[in-house]
Image (cartoon, rainbow, N blue to C red; front, side, top):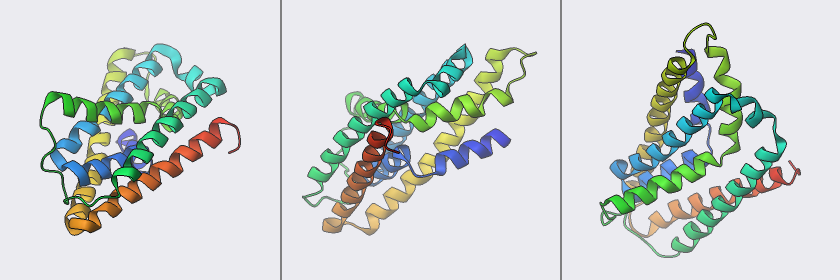
Length: 205
């Protein structure tokens, strides 16, 4: 219960994953937003596996790797932000009902959210710091980390789907020309996050 509470609080803090969940919900609806959430869950599971294999201390202590992650994440977020701001110049319907319902489109949506999540340095610091205290070294390690991964995945889905529902609701309220403000706010939020990550990677924050 303690880990679930910590995970929910950590995921609820506004960040790139939250911004993507809100935007995917507003653009594509709840069902398609779930694929983006799945990308975040996959990223967290990979990072948890790295902690379980003993890379947790390296991830948390290596300023070089954290700076590299911040730099990659900053440029990727900047790329997405510019794309969102460019597409926000034209009005759109509240939710894109014409979003292609095929494997290629859903995989692309999942991959975009996965890259944003895996290049988020907050996750690289969170898991090595939080998970080890919940592991009993006298018991099978793999099974314990599997249980922890399930708890964190459930917290991810719960929180991010709530944000996706919030985005979907906002899109319905701002139907028509006003819906572009969702894209603009989304693009500006990611732009600010990318600048913060860039400054952090350069040692200015």
